[in-house]
Image 1 (tube, rainbow, N blue to C red):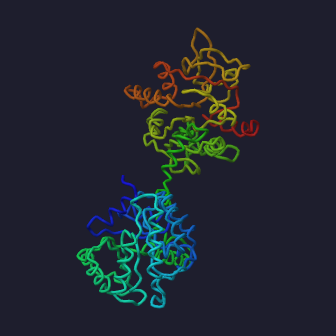
Image 2: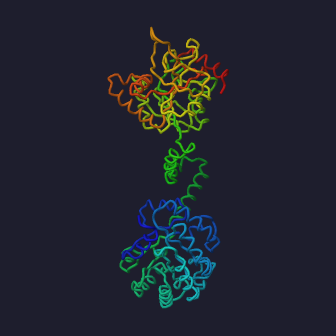
Image 3: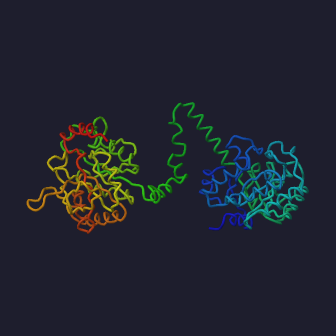
Length: 543
């Protein structure tokens, strides 16, 4: 893409009539660009009005520059600043041009009135004009100060505004052009374009001509094209739109004491996020957050109604059953958020509409009644980041277990309880056989998972523990998991498979997960008895 200064220069010299629209902050500037305009008018009136100060240089030039920096940051099209009189003498003009170049503004338009200026439509005839030679000195100072050859200085002739005739307008325009102005803006407050068209005819394209048809807005655009106008500025309609829309909305809300009447007529909050670039920040977080690593996400498998719990789950899924007064899923989400895990996806099935837990995104396994855990996980494949925790939705656990899981450096990591198997509360299946038993004296012991089965082997070594239903997938492990899922999906019985089948496939593929041994401090809810014990578990184990 061409530099913004070159884009503006091309707009002025293209030989065709182009159009730019006013903007007064980053949000309006982005909207102007999205609408298809090739350039932006940084209106002095609009920049002042958004702060509710007068268009009399009450907004300092440094405050103007601060606003422009936001506007240039979020757009790729050029901005032509309405620079009033240059905010002072030739020296102020030099500083202004240098600063505008530093922040990426493509050009500035200055008017031949005295500082501090007054808006042209407020008693214009009483406003004195700058001495021609003094104003030419400002133009020359600005041109000598620009760092980029394509930076444009537009000289705005206020002769018609101040009550002078065509001869004075032409004399001033010719002097400003000779002083180095890249274009001439001829201004008029008449409701008909006669003054401007008369000037254009006499000017005869000596250099690009710019107009601002705020007062003679009913003139067909073809008239400007035939007159050889290079650039038309729609000068204040974004700020005027904002004012009328805000007045209407404020009156409506005040009168109705409700948002119902206005909510469907205003932009959605998600549209604000889009214009702010919220998605880009989320992508950046994946690259840079957590000390240069990646943010962790979570996938909660929670499609089940719960066996033998029909009386309790008539109007809600199992994960919404309260334990010590707090739904199980709420407990899990809170634990994740305390560890900085905020991207949480819950794969729901039965009564998915009854899940009411802030901070989690709900995915729906519509076939939950006839499918198993891997079918639910398949619904969440798009939710994987480069670091993701997979967990059963009915799992209660101490917070330190999640903290430790996130603390390890492993592509694939599973939590295995090595407590006496007969004393573990909860799932009596998912027996884990590992490359070495738990050495409780060694933290981050290097052990790999060898297999997970539902019943103990009749002969051979004993199981080393139970997989508790918590797994972390990071880095290359995400691709290992995706590959294993693709393999399993070729099987006729895929829809009935569970997470242990995925673990065993990873092992078969040569990507055995590492094992993090734990010792109690967890339970899962499989039946009414488990639910009755869960309250005591939460009270006795705490965080």
